[in-house]
Image (cartoon, rainbow, N blue to C red):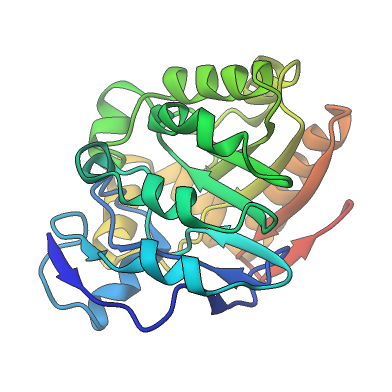
Length: 265
């Protein structure tokens, strides 16, 4: 854990659907091998991704003094409910001190967020997303070693819904033959308000991850690394999403070209 003092809490962003981001942590102990945020290692040279976390210990005080208009996204280069949060409760302190009129969107892979239901309910306009996919067993241990199981995340979505908090499922990363989008929709549609979908950002992944995928799942790698095959696969998945008759905020496609699909291809 590396403690630092931040200069400000909120940073303008071009992330779709958000005006600002807030990152009380940089780095993530979930250590997902495909994570796009690994690029932060260029500026934070503390070792392998997942082995370090930068803690902005003064953010609870900064959010007391700062107020922004527009939507705030938590978080873009970390998970606000990664394992360290259970001990130091930095995210909770930030939420407690934040202006409750701020429009807030939280995304996490952890059901630890349920600990803070009382604070979440104080916000006038809030939505909470859980990243879900189909990784389990050996596969999950290899590419998402320290995140809670998908079963726990899906249960968290259900509990958020039962407590009257707007929720969304962020189905990501979509990888051919490894993530069953249709099944995930069926499993969650009765208690999820809306969905985001993201296809694997292979370009942003590390060289090690690309080699691992190519070696262990060559068919999956081929489908998302070949331009024509990737386009066909994207269209097939979008058709499944459309047939699901669900509310969709957006679909993020990284290859063969970057697209934010608000609607259908």
